[in-house]
Length: 226
Image (cartoon, rainbow, N blue to C red; front, side, top):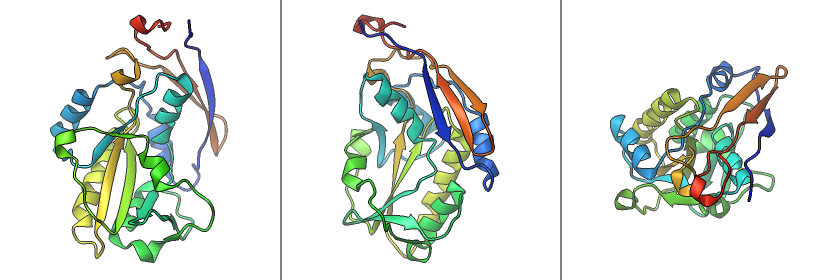
């Protein structure tokens, strides 16, 4: 029997130049186990189109589950051109919202091809599963902007930002496809729908914090300990 254990993770944060990060991290909620249907209902409620929306692929491995959750805490921008070359921000801007807005408004003014080895677009999208098969479209944009989001981490502000980006991209000189990826816990990963994973957050200093994860809410029939 594989037991669910308490997991302690050190999260590196850039806090000094972007107060939004501090507020969002401090407001972390305990993640609830969702389903594709509940995620679609949420997007419909806020009038967000389900076209090009995804969830992360299933895994009942505890380390992969934690890794999935941590994706939405990252301040990295995943921007690729139509042949899979990743683009990185030219300046030292720390706030993710500003970097996303600039990616949509004028890619080449603010971004350039990354100079160091980085994760490929194929590696990133290989973990995605369509949220709504009926509304997943194929297009040939100039750039792909991949955005992670979750209901437990800064959801209201994040989705407001994304809705603004959808409007902004209509005025962009480039054809940019925004790919929205939900990182909430999913029942398809062998987890119990509606249960929550407890999080304990603590600042350790100006630029770091600890994040402790409680027991992962596995489904009992999978011989996992609750």
